[in-house]
Image 1 (cartoon, rainbow, N blue to C red):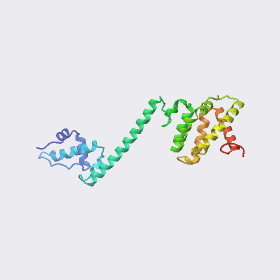
Image 2 (spheres, rainbow, N blue to C red):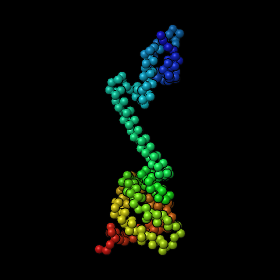
Image 3 (cartoon, one colour):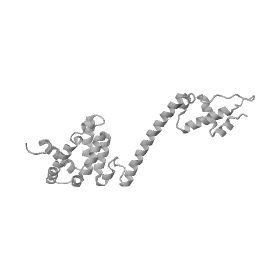
Image 4 (cartoon, rainbow, N blue to C red):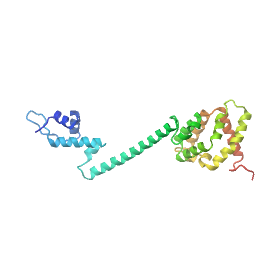
Length: 245
């Protein structure tokens, strides 16, 4: 019993085009031909086709299949590689599902980085954008510190976020003087808040320039002025607790 190319394709659940391609890359040997010139495939060819289909369903590429020589070490090595890739893919997908669950549970938007879902409702649009930018510029330690700060200093953040863009100089100065001890405490507790530059994922200078630009673009003029005055206050009194010597 022998089959034509079309009959073999139907039996194996594949296409004539696929069989011809497998011939071209030497995955399946050419069969003998009948007197009329037509190819005549045997059970050996069908088994090989079914084997290829199974390996493809397992995720192997045609190049990997071609490189294997039976069920020896080559096959085992390829299977181990595929298993490791699959495990890594599953882990990534589980992480994505966990992030999606957090977004749904806290009704958070797409601009909330992972880990900040629980405090998303207390963050301003500018805060969320700043955190998103920072997640691109800095490593995990900075992001963990920002997450802790967002959780433990919500009252101060709310006051800072509430100052209007047209606040007068007295209001800016008053908020800066009350905000400075909070920032001093944060810097004492979190080294990355004191100097985030060393934690940059890329060039430190580029990261700090991007942070300065983001602060200017995201926060209103009064908020920027408060931050500038806080910086001056702390620069004039660099001691961690701010007390007189």
